[in-house]
Image 1 (cartoon, rainbow, N blue to C red):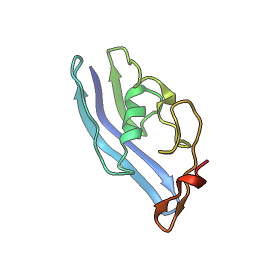
Image 2 (image 1 turned 30 degrees about the vertical axis):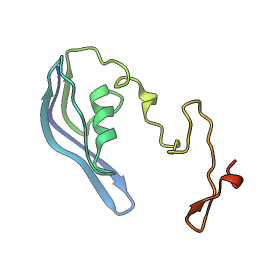
Image 3 (image 1 turned 120 degrees about the vertical axis):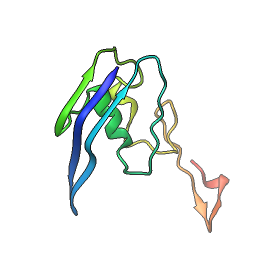
Length: 108
């Protein structure tokens, strides 16, 4: 089981403090699959990093009495520099759009 007990996490931003988790308490039982859904900026990646142990909470405790497996435990799973145009092999393909239409002749 991985359990959060009173976990809070926030970040400093240009417009002030952004609270991602506020006194969250939940237990993820072993042997079950869980999905994390939310809007952009809701804290999904932060929650996964907290569960994996690659980031520490501001307050509260996280207990892990199970092994953390791939991809949760792999810190490189989320790479902010990659976009939807990035390939799995690390190459990036640039797309050219003209007037809202894709110009295949100009794609590189």
